[in-house]
Length: 411
Ligand SMILES: NC(=O)c1ccc[n+]([C@@H]2O[C@H](COP(=O)([O-])OP(=O)(O)OC[C@H]3O[C@@H](n4cnc5c(N)ncnc54)[C@H](OP(=O)(O)O)[C@@H]3O)[C@@H](O)[C@H]2O)c1
Image (cartoon, rainbow, N blue to C red):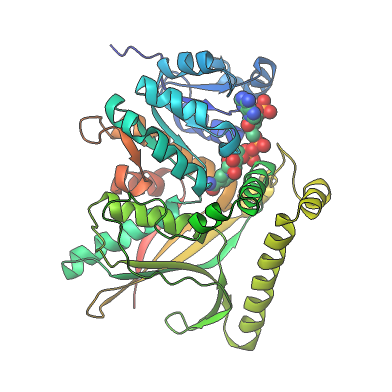
């Protein structure tokens, strides 16, 4: 008989993405079924409104009230469940007390953060205690960085099967995607820009591709990075920088380091956006690069940032409409090359907008995988990545139940 009331508690259930997550958990697991779960947040009234909005099927959904700054309430929450899945962000502002409570109580945890500087801080401050308590902490379980991290894991599994060893070089190119941003994502991004603008050491850390790798034995291979428009002969197209690469590449390198360099000590990985062939593709790459650079520059200047936040960008609780989530998608292409030049092409796709419709499903399946599939005896306490703790099991869940595909392509 489990000492816990729940398998999973969804903390931040009333956030924009938390509501999508709860609807998905309800569709997938109902209430009181194979996965016992509860919705948690700081306001009883908002939680009750959420439960009502989910319809009669949610009538018996348990609710848990806790504030992200109330250590006692967080510890009670952690003791009631085997896994906490959190969408309370910006994580750098609100996330640490919950990670601390999970680590203290040996409770497993996953989230949606893409704030690399915060992940690094959490590893530095809490990894030793997580190892001691048995808490498994898995950050970055949304669009950043599951498709990249599991996409590389998938390509490397295929390379080992076909060639007996890993690819030493993998490129990920975003072929197409459609979606938008939410207020929470914008707030998290703005907070990183604000922290970095005030701290040169943080800017240096954010530029380090190995910033999430354990300090001992970090590899030293020089990592390529698409920072300007360039022609990519391997994909016969122009490419531009991909903003999420700054998160995804760090997670992929941590996966390599945690797996004892299963991808090789000199493994090289980068990501970029495909903008098209011919002069129009080149023009689009230039325009996109200039747009991203302009946005980052404007966000780093206080008054311009305030103007963007006030007049242009979505506010807390806002995000893409249900229709935009339903008609959104993503299509990522991978090219792996072994040291002796053998190649594998693959693609990873999702059937909803990347940041919300698909992310809600990826996060829900990550939480279920942590609660139901991966025993503590198999994976000990510590800070894991999606690929190193879930691997093929999450690929299977996402393919069977969350609208993702992972497939190899002819060369
Ligand atoms: N990795 C990815 O692919 C991905 C995709 C989407 C989102 N995200 C991240 O997910 C996070 C949430 O995004 P969102 O757009 O859903 O945000 P949001 O709608 O602005 O929601 C933020 C949530 O935090 C809660 N909160 C704030 N302070 C709290 C406190 N002291 N105690 C308890 N709860 C508190 C809010 O509670 P109330 O509801 O009571 O106000 C709200 O539910 C962001 O960090 C975003 O960057 C990541």
